[in-house]
Image 1 (cartoon, rainbow, N blue to C red):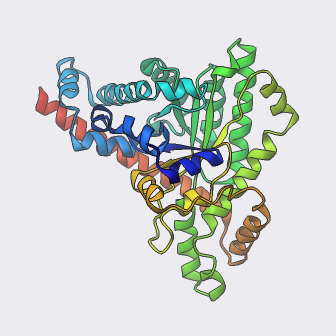
Image 2 (image 1 turned 90 degrees about the vertical axis):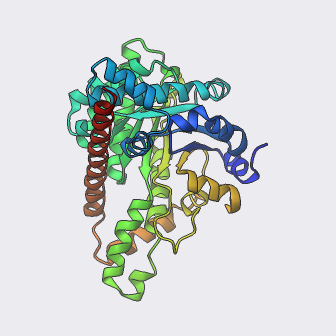
Length: 369
């Protein structure tokens, strides 16, 4: 039976995706259970998640032994392990995918972090991962770096569904939407069925508060301190305004009339980092139709336990959101500098997780040989 609070969020038009995946979660039946009990309709992954899952060891021994027997190196083994998890998770969500006409039931897998500044390398691996997973309800995650924009267009243009990740700024978000529309135009020219292509744009939330709040604390005035915990939500709400405006354009409308779908905003990094803030802040305050909220399990459980879903919390909030970011600027905090720093830090964190994962798998392969 579905939880009343997660059901209420779904009723607003929010798709609940779990920001976690492991072999144990798949094989234990827990992932399937979350579909029924917590209205979970998709999964996102990233290098950090896989580092934790594979590093934990449970459920991967036989597959690692098989890879060792085939003399695969650590990088190839990681591809084998992660694509198998994603393919099996796609199968778990196949019913959701069919029932939602492809809107949900999606499982995302990310290109290697080291390719974030390599356009051609990203395109090649996006196509390879799509072919390897071989599930219509998969999504390939591509970071929204400058170099990633063309990769997004090329991958969409090849008829592949894409989860654009690591978006922090409104300016970059506009560029991401343009890259998606370019991709749809190319896909149409190449004869792909636009209705089969889906995309989400992952706008990161909590990290914006973490960085801006640290700077507000350093300023230390009562005016600065009063703004803490407000920037992340304000930034995401303005992103939703960009989404509404962009997909109301004549260019977008023409593609939608041809069967294409709008690229939905996805709220990522929704686990609250500051214990002084409500633990469901980035869920209940960003509830809006046609959005996705990908939650760590702790956030999902908090929502199910005590989340106060009060309908659409985004539409009509744009003036106030602008006022918040203008006030932050008035404290001498540079928005462009913050978002550029967050992108660089995000890429660095994924690089570190990937390096840790490589080391863990190399050790496991050596032990299995």
